[in-house]
Image 1 (cartoon, rainbow, N blue to C red):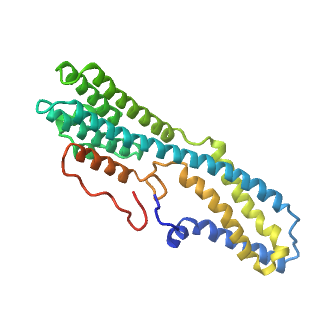
Image 2: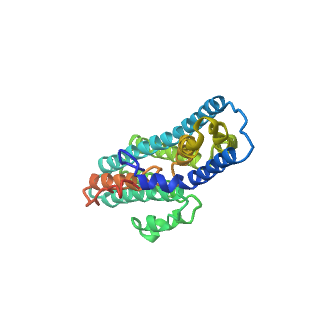
Image 3: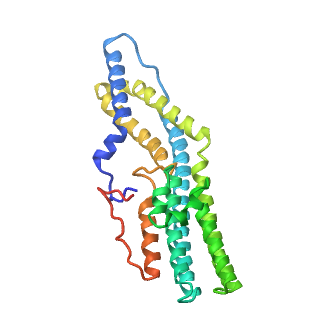
Length: 294
């Protein structure tokens, strides 16, 4: 996620220079044809076209941002639920009998959020899980298709074992199970966003109409702007291409690009809070790298 107040010029140029270069070349061709050939540009209702396209792009960008913001809200719930789980494990489980179980629950939750991060980014989670759990502890979950869900199930089974040993009572088990339900619901919402793209109409038509408008733009402006058409048309096209790119950047908040949610930083926040809750040494928070928080 870009955390700078303003995007870096180099990053903007790297994302839009190709379509802008093509648009500028097309603008120059239209201007040359208009002034050095007998062909004349038809009258085009560019204001009407542009207004309709702007509304279309605005609606699409709002839909993409709604997905991005919902994903951020779900990760906020995940952070809070992880803190609650660690606090309940610390307060409910007695010392010294369950000291190892407390640490296991905390480490399993840290491994869980990192596994979920990898799954959402289509990365293999094994190495991240094994950073926090032994191979014997992690293997049942790593053998499952959904590693994160396997880790969560394993935590639930350990809580049931604690109840059977008399370390927690039924009410305490129900309270901790409620936290696991919240975690599972958050994961389900994230997977829904990841696995359900915007409808094809939201992806194809905005791109098609924006490119068509950019092609028609210099034809309708050349009589007014004359030799300034390449500059004026390119700048006008930039606004529509930028609006199109905004939707593309936000539509998948888990794609591991500079525009997506800082999952690494949020997982590190969970790791710090949970380790400190049980008195363990915690790592430093992740800081932005060249204005980007990963």
